Image 1 (cartoon, rainbow, N blue to C red):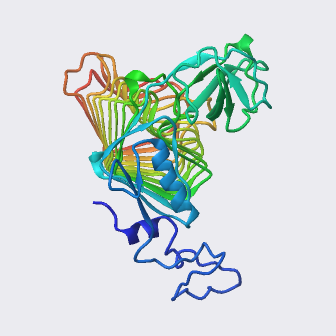
Image 2: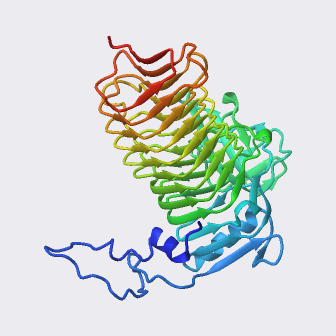
Image 3: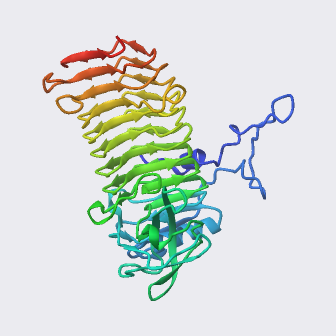
Length: 442
């Protein structure tokens, strides 16, 4: 069910006066009973019955168009007036650059009738050196590149041999020379064979708060695009954002992640379908606090749900996680105090649930509760349904159904690594395996 305007406003910052009571002195602050719009006061805002709505579509819209530029124009317009809704009307929209969301914006599609498709990517090497302070690049083959395109520059670092990546927009051109929207602050030297590719996240935000993305389809056109991993892109890719609602979104066929958020807090992803992506279905990224992932379908990705580094106090509940080629759920580096509850984790390619080994003591996940999940038919003939690796300790697995229906073969229900610490196992059902439990600590 699509939330009402009032529900969305409450979830994204407006109408939160009661929750934001500040104890600036020894007693309780007075309750705000009649909030008013006051200059400079972003903490307390009335819940208005109506806010600005700008429509985008092929016809009969405030902004007519079917490109990223039309959608971006609508976003920028409502931002200038203090926020509101960008309503994407039914139609097929072709993207040559990311749509960048700002604070206070609700991007609302028309369900399955609003389809945003990433155009095919082009790649070429750089024909001339570009130093870290330069704001232009020269391309060996500029065919397929246009002013306004989103591009990613990738090179081997001349200093340490690592991989340097930066994302830009092409803003001016003379022949094969293009001006960038900003200097890369990295050295792209010919000797390191740097490349430019028309790759970008389809919908993105950085250092932004209180926004929503709802009820639309994002198609990454995977067959016609090169790979860009979830640290940089995806159908949705967010960096350093807070209080975000992603609801009713289909994120499909991206040559990378479906939905990825890095160092983002209080992100809610509900009733979404992330499928057939080359990378991760949902990627609560490094340092993300309190993510809520509920009632999603995560199918035919590499990993369905991947807890990255330091994801804490999250809830993954009632998700359908099926036919992912690697793991159903992967959890590891300092991913602490999360709850994984009431999920269907079916037909994972290698492992149903993986606790990663990480670097050893102090790095593995702890304090997580995994309960009431159904983990069925995991891996190949020597697959493992639940694999707890490294020195992982301090987690609880309770009342899970861990089942193999295809025959035992060499399959293992639960495997505890040789260095695994003490975890709590309570009332789990493990049946149908060659070894229901393999404890390598013995």
